[in-house]
Structure formats: C-alpha cells, structure tokens
Image (cartoon, rainbow, N blue to C red; front, side):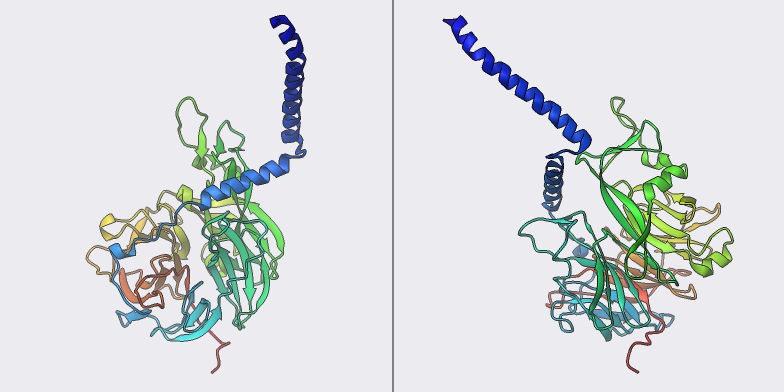
Length: 455
C-alpha cells in the first residue's frame, strides 16, 4: 500500500519540482534581461517603498519651544542700518489668503510688510504627475522652494512635496499674472541659478537601484529599500528643456573624494554607506562674473553646491565635471552657501551652539582659513533663538553689508549684519486664521529693480 501511494504521488512531486525550477530559472532571466514581469514587480516595489515612506508622520518644527508669538504677519525694524529694498518671499497653499483665495505662491513686500504684488498658488498644477508616487487619500500640497524673479515680473519656481516618493517634483515658469508658461516634471528640487544667457542650473535626481559602487573600490552605497536618490545638476534651456546633466556622485568619485561616502562598518559588512539619500544636494549656485573676477581660478559658470548629508560644500567645474574646491565638516546638515567676503557663508543647521538654538552662520575661507562663526555672537541679542531644523535660505546684499536668512518651517526672515552679528530687521509669517501658528517660508530674496510694478 505505501509503495503504491508513493508511485502515484511521485510524478506529481517531480512535476511540481520541475515547474519550480523552471520558474526559478525564468525569474533569474527576467531579472537579468528585464523580461516580463520584471517591470511590473519593480513598479510594485517602488510603490511599496513610496507607501512606506509617505506613511511616516510629518514632524513640525518645535516653534512653540522658543519663538515669540504674533497673531498676524509682522515686520519689525530693529536698527537704522536695516535695508529698504523690497523682498521676494515664497509662500504656498494657504499663505496670505486675504490676497489669494487658495494661497499665494509668492509675494513682493516692502520693509513695513506691505504687500506690493502677489502670485497665486495653483493647487491643481501638479495633479498629473507621472514619476512621483502619492499615497492614496492623502491631501496633496506641493510647495515652492527655490524661486527666481525675472525683469518682467515672471517667476521660475522649484516644487517639492511631503508624503511622496520621491520628494522632488519639478520646475514651473509663470508670468507676472500667475499664468503658467510651462512646467517640467524633472524631479528638480531646492535652490537653483539662472545664467545671463537664460540657461537654468538646477538640482535634480534619478531614483536608481542599489547598490552603487564607490569609485571602483570594494566600498558601495547600499539601501535597505533597494532604491537610491542619485543627485544631478540639470542644465536646462530657458524653456526648461534638458541640455545636459552632471552626476554629483560621479563628480565626487572622479575628483578623488570617494572617501566622503565611505564609513567604517562591522567586520562582516563591506565598507560604504547605507542610505537611500547619500548626498542630498540642496543648491546649485553659479559663481558669476563678480566672484570670478576676484578669484582668477574660478569661472562664472562654476557652481557652488551643497551636500547636506555629507556636511560638504564645494565648487564644481561644469566643463571638466570635477571639483575645484571642497569644504567638509565645517557645518552640519547645512543649506544655502553663498559667496561672501572672499569666502563662503553657510547656513549651518545643526552645528551651532545649543544655548543659542543650535543653528549658526559660519564663514569658510577659500584658502587655508579655519571656519569662523559670523552669527550668532556672544553678547549680541537676538529676537528669538536661532533654530532651523530642516532647511533655510541665505541671500547676501549687493554690497555685502547685510544677509537675509529665511528659516523655512519656522516662518521667520531675519536681516543680519554679518560684521557685527546684529539682527537688523525681522519678518514673522503666521497663518491667516489668527491662531498664531507659523507657516513655512522657503526663500526670501532682495529685489533691487521691480520695474514691472506700476509706478
């Protein structure tokens, strides 16, 4: 009886075993040669990663812990040395709803806080995204980050979004009346530059499979999600069409700085970095003619870039695609480096004195100078503690006498005298519902000739 049972069952077992082997072999071929259903599985994997990432709760900046409260947007001058130039400020969904029904994308204001011009926020602008995954049922609110004002009153804006994978969306160009001239879902993000010839130099990314080898060595960048943000500088024509792209990982490796992405690990693991966001490029700022004239080794089309996740800023030669200069470790989680006083001024998000809030402005020389804290300074009072947890933007006045510091989620803009460390002027943006809650300001910039405004 047992023998007869085995005799009847054996062909079925062999058939299932053969089918399993065939499926295994086809799976290997599908993975190797991208055969069906490789793309379906890969898309499902990406969606699963997106769902896992966007399901994380969004943490608000702990403004209540240190910031004084106001009930309406408030501009305050603390010193006669404060500037008089109008300022361009980014907004987003729900900002200044007394002026724009769904919120103001950006506005131009004077130093008393008077609104001179607004651009409307369009909540439907990015409803047709193809490369960005959103969590079903979660409210979508793309927000502006980098912004450029043209002489005719038009704007160029980069967008990002919370609760998406990836966080980068793209660029959009508007006229003075908030009409969309074009938009490009390029996974562009953060702060960018527009050259005198109209070309646009903007941070972008590609989502690639891990691991990535580091400069041909045994080390690698790996990620538990199987995906890695590979940062790029995109070079676009004035209509947003891609002319070229420069891989930031390749530029670091080929410049001989691969060790920035290698950390010691347990003996059982290979050296490298274990993250899905190895660099977090957050700026591509052209050197420009003025700095290039004072520094003969620089070109106007070199780029000052910032890599938040490796605490590094550098100057990239866009022709050779190699770095001419790097500064590593002078700041922690930094944003918005700007050329200033024969050096680079950096918004050091997390490397400042904790007694002052944890954030500072630090100057790094282009030679052998050691980093120097410019702001805050001992004994120089501030309206609030200087605390920026997630981002921030700097703009240096034309004469170098003043610096604007927009503090992202904290909703504050300070104008600072970098020579004395004094806060000269302050703008606090709060929600228009009157409860005193802060809303994000990603960027604030000096505007010198707003010729598009009616006289």
